[in-house]
Amino acid sequence: MILRRMLAIWISKATCVVCKLAGKQGVTLAGKIALKIDPKILMELSGQVRKKIFITCGTNGKTTTNNLLCSAIEAEGEKVICNHTGSNMLNGVISAFVLAAKWNGKLDADYACIEIDEASTRRVFPHFKPDYMVLTNLFRDQLDRYGEIDITMNILKEVMQSAPKMKVIVNGDDALSAYLAMESGNPYVTYGISEKVVNDKDSHEIREGRFCKKCGAPLKYNFYHYSQLGDYACTGCEFKRPAIVYDASDVAVSDHLAFTVEERHLEANYKGFYNVYNILAAYAGIRTAGFKAEHFMDMLKNFNPENGRMEQFRIKGAGVTLNLAKNPAGFNQNISAVMQDTNPKDVIIAINDNAQDGIDISWLWDVDFDRLGEESIRSITVSGIRCQDMRLRLKYVDIPSILESDVEKAIRDRVADGTGNLYVL
Image (cartoon, rainbow, N blue to C red):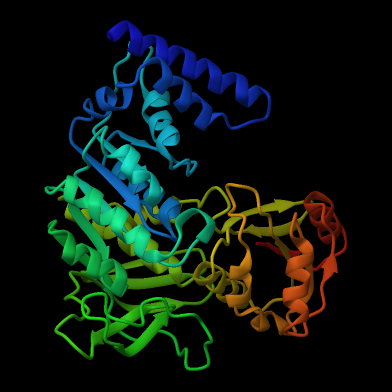
């Protein structure tokens, strides 16, 4: 068995190297090969983690939250395995362990921080039972893959109950996530924001959690943060927003983020109200695991979002911000982050419908694109496979756009002849 494990590791590592030389990521393929050679490799390697295993699930924010949590634990001097790239299905999870293993088949890790696609939890949990699950939120997402939210909730409830000792670190501001944590029977701890931060009275956002999952009656909200996140209580039964353990206050959202939790002031030099939740989730995770989080602020100062999550870089002197949008709630928060920048800017919206993107793009009609009509946005270019669909969507809110299906050319054009401040969504 040890020889089989070593062979799987050697071939997987070699595969990953060859893929990178060919300009491909190769992470998923490496995991697929490892599982084929040794079907028990994930069970064996995860069992070598000396302390605890975290998993991060939820519709939006998984990659950023998981990477923040990993960095926070590493800042405490621990060795951590993490699928940083966001490869979060079974093969990607296997790769995280296999590529971190040594050539002798041994793993040197105190903790593991693993992001898992919600639908893939059914395939991962038979291999190991995590100690903690961070549950970020539940929104409608990729209907061709997930179906309606109830299907996702049923999958997560099933896997939670298969690991009854696993503690759930849940976003208490999301009625769907909170209900799931309560109903699962697992121990849970909450994080959230108990004060009203934004005025959303003119918002046209689709609210997913309008009705109580327990009795079906409407939920009454004292206020919303965005989408269905906020302070809620059922009008027909006792279900309500749970008491919040890790509660953010004095939240500031402008050119940077700041808030206070447990009398500790935290700041981060990036945009987007949703990132307050990501940071708060990581903080709740590390505190729940027993760390004092004394180095958390230092970690935030050095943390650089990756993989297109508010990732910032420069091309020929132009500042570029790259962000992922894959469902209405996430895209609306993307737009909010763009509009926080009052400087002149160009926007490129690239919409694809490959299998990994989701082939159903009807969700674009639930996004508040009319907010992009402000004067500070000097140009909007639509690109990608479904650029014509995006162009039509903007036409219905009277916003003109430039059509350029080739993403690379679209970026080169705006870098060469733009404001020098480019957002690519």
